[in-house]
Image (cartoon, rainbow, N blue to C red; front, top):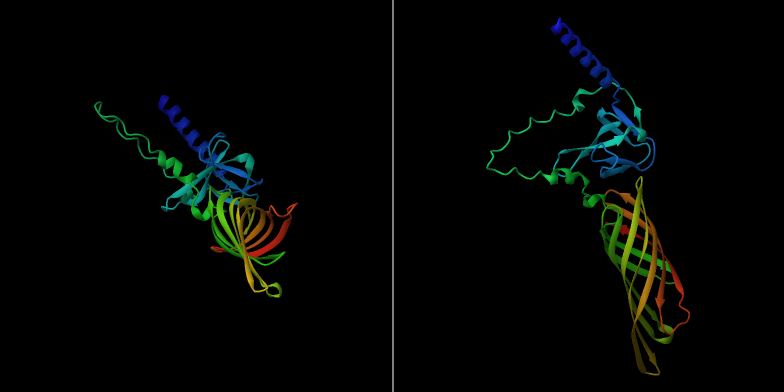
Length: 282
């Protein structure tokens, strides 16, 4: 009689597990923008990635209110998994389970070490590796070459270094040369900006903005009645940045608006110059 009850209990658990797994969808779709994907099935766990509304994910399994989803592979080729709460998604497609997507059972725990040996430290790198942001995922990163026009023509080149996914710091050089033949005046000017930028990705567009400050080097030479007069001075320059990059593979076409001001002690008040740029980021 006791064995009979035990068999009934085991069969009931098996049927219950099959019923639960049959309700697990193959895919889920994000219901909201900025849906958090976490490293563990806990609300206070570290955010692994942020999903846009409508993004589809393959479901591995569901435990309680958390879906285990496939995130692709990391730089070493190992599969990366994340966890998303059921309030952030809705089922999409067939709810039959896919055997090939089942998580492999965890390995058996190792035997305890001898009493005279200290246990090794847990491999923290295994947990930290998925949250690292690779260079290709940094929105503000890379070199650029641009041409500007507005108050006068203006070249621009430099580079940005990504500080995480959305932030970046960089250098921008803006040389300018002008030769006014009517009065024999030649002007050479160079602005060097240290920039801070913030960017967000929308489909294949990257929207970004920021600004910078740096020195302005000004040199002018003119001929008056056969005599040459030169002037060199250093001033402080400011500029703002608002732009959009159209991503085409590893190259992006950029369009920018920049207001630029040179703090010239000979002018009061200082005025802002308006410039529009078009160029490439690579």
